[in-house]
Amino acid sequence: MSRTSAVIPLEGAMNCRDVGGYRTANGQQIRTNVLFRSDKLSQLTEDDQEELESFGIRTVVDFRTSAEANRDVSRLWSTVTTHAPLPIGDEIAQQTEFVERVRAGAVTVVSVSDVADSYVEMLTDAGNQFASFLNLAADYEYWPLLFHCTAGKDRTGLAAALILELCGVERTQVLDDYELTNRLRSEKRIRELTPSLRAAGADIEAIRPALSAPRAAMQQTLDYLDDTFGGTENFVINSLGLGPETLHQLRLNLLL
Image (cartoon, rainbow, N blue to C red; front, side):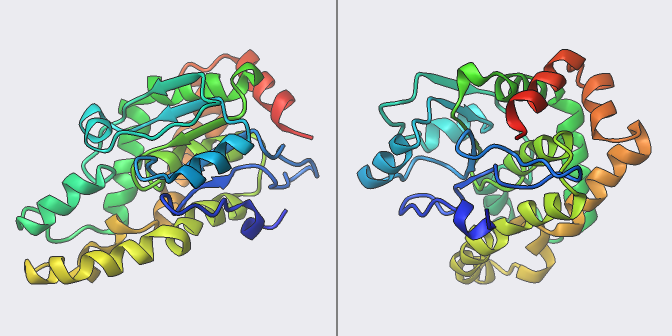
């Protein structure tokens, strides 16, 4: 499956796509139509809802904070039977709050390394949330499952990267999946935000890493897991406390 075919075209969400279809290093393939990733669901149209209903998506995992979720209430659809809030807070990931801080002059520069550091911090501080997500994703009783945050790039990007890494997808493709957010959402959002941010005196290029999905940031994050824990698998087992049986179930259920 090409990554173009993985994208679900919606009017009210820009970054909704199937996580499946990637091939692993040993020649297997991640099952399609069971795990989906997205940006916020608060602006879905009725047609969008019908489109997501057609996939039978029954579980929605929301990584947004309560403030984000209350401000932009998700418009769920009829097949959803489980709505699982797993809030993860981060200054960069909470895009609306971040943009307001930029406009106020509280943030003027964000580097790629700053983004990578925020990812490592999220994985460390919100380990229980990511572990809960992986447990849900491994259990086919909750399928099809969609997970999302506000932009679908930071918290959602990390969650998708964990899934792909644990299933044995080549690192290059893991980074491709993360970076696809730029084409689907980030560049459009940057164009929309540029006039007001420039009017507030902000240097767009100086904060671009926080508004986009810089490949090097995810690369640095995964390199950190390699160097510190000996890889993503050791990280989720030894740091997140994910049981080996859950990891086995994840692969057994997701890989064809």
